[in-house]
Image 1 (cartoon, one colour):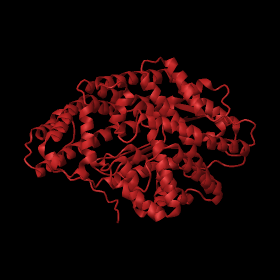
Image 2 (cartoon, rainbow, N blue to C red):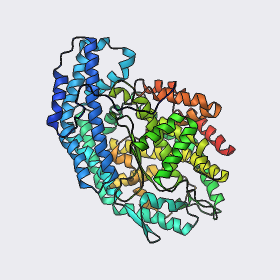
Image 3 (tube, rainbow, N blue to C red):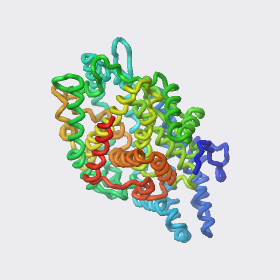
Image 4 (cartoon, one colour):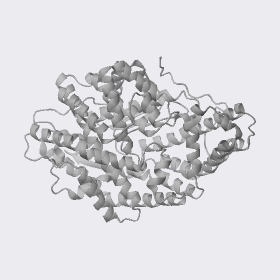
Length: 572
């Protein structure tokens, strides 16, 4: 099958082409029409679904642009007010209508006549949304949507001075690769101290978010927010016990590999003790990897790399670049992190990141590029709801692209020695990310099961969990205060609660696809495309099967995949 990146904005049939969302009054008539419309046949119902989908796409894209613009410039009050206005004045008025429309669909006699295969996951989500909806949660959710963005505002202001120059924390992190050990330590401490300066506002923000989230869960009849959120995220195919099993498997089968990697690093650097500011470093005389200088260069090189895999992949990024849908470089006042934001009506998504010229940035770019390709592939699906794929398969799209693309990273590196180092570092990260995923996930289970804890108890519990998944090879002496608040750097805890185990499940899927790729690149990429173009029209296990993968995170399976990664590392 041939794929095209010539993405077309959806044609409007229900709303005028020039309609833009300015206030609720202009939007409400379309919801009234959908609510009051008489449905006399399956054909009527399918047209009603298409019209509702069009409204959803327009609203979703409008909200996304408000958020994108605000994260690109957190110091612009006008952009913040535009986002806040939508979340406080428009979104809360949409929700009761959305619930009415969901109930109208489920109770419609013609719904039973819809194609069961085609609509199964869609209707399952609709029923889930009905089950979770509570009128009293509308104002709380509106507040949460606005409050969550404060993490980006607080973090976006964080800078440190290194060698007389001001850097964002993302930019300063590149000094942790420097051969000068004293400079690495200085920068590590400066970054950590800068985070500690905002310890109180970040802790206070999290405490407020926690209490509101707990209230949302209680209002919906749940004992805690974790149980509510599992259903809200559509985790139909695994349980909290599966997560606990994952944590234990990481301890048993990943930590020994992590320890081996850090022992090798200590030996390579000729150190008696390995400190946290040493883990990214190279031996004296080895220059840090600098795969690009500017955002434009990063774009061009990633397109060239993607073209080597499939021309369609490169074309997707080229199209986004032409549309102005890339904001890649780190700067003061920009929110931290990186994301790919699907745009439901335009189709071509937006990539946001904080590049500073490091290998990490290449990984982030190809990762978000994988997400972008997923957005392109799902855009052709008939309904907006069909494009709402599970986050676990979304992260397979991005993490598999990190591994597929490695074979073509010569576009970023001039020498085979540098390319080898880049691959080694990438594979190290494939392994060392697992303990951090387990730490963040286990911490969230405790936080939301015990919502009435004090800040002191939270810091203590975090520290205990962090130590469970920390390598004894690294010497953390004297750094306890930094480590007790290390969770403050994790955006997901503030902005997308409980979203993190997905990275672990998806990393297993990505390694599985990479295993296929090593045997037959053509077939592996075909499987990748086959799974992603299904969007959210199949269950998570079915999507994994479409990619030729097992949906499995048992200790035995994790052990087998870790063995494969280790073998690949040894062969470099």
